[in-house]
Length: 290
Image 1: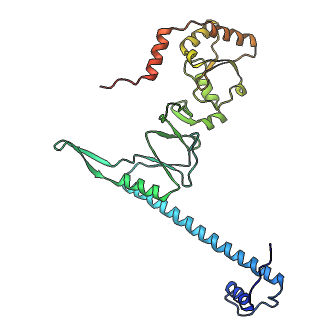
Image 2: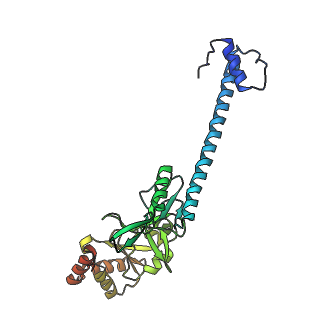
Image 3: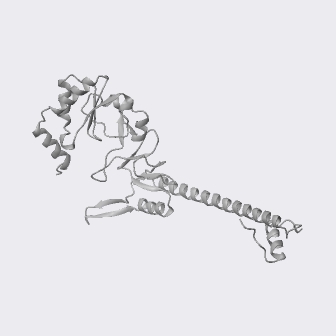
């Protein structure tokens, strides 16, 4: 770094006195390069301290504003929940976390005019303030749920045709995200073993937990009922179906002969075409509403 050159002696004195306003003495030897370098270092340190102090003040002000907005929600009896961030794939964690709630204004139906009348516009106004504030994301409470382990949000309502759940229920309605389940999946795997309920998340390393892969099927060949029946016919009751990649797994044995028997049973099974097409129709066509 080149040494800064001061144009005049007065400039050096002014710079020194601005750094130390409590002293009136002039630094001896200010014309020396080492003195000028030290003067620049001190000026940089003081500038950094001022910037850091300003940044902390700004952060404290933003935190106070955020807490004030939360207090407005509480005073208006709005059910708003705070979460640290997202456990849903493809989302980044905001600075101040994520809030879920009902951001619709409160209205009531007027049967005489046959119109909706506004009762309280606080939800939409508060939502606009949060969006203007920045650093926080707002989500609808009926589309998201919090993981009961890491307190991060997971989507429970599909937002596209290619969406897949990144969570699972364990035990008595305990919902956990895919990341938490990947760390300790034993209870979940045990609850699904030998049943027609498939594992919907693909983040668990099943082989690491003692499961052997039997086969990965094409989507058109993924018929759970016929798969379960075929495995029962060859007396395999410790199996696991994974709908994330249409794979079939078995557990409790290291004999490849049983894996071959299970694969052969699946390949030679007879699918009930009527039931399969009925299930396919139900999955694609929404239920009729009155």
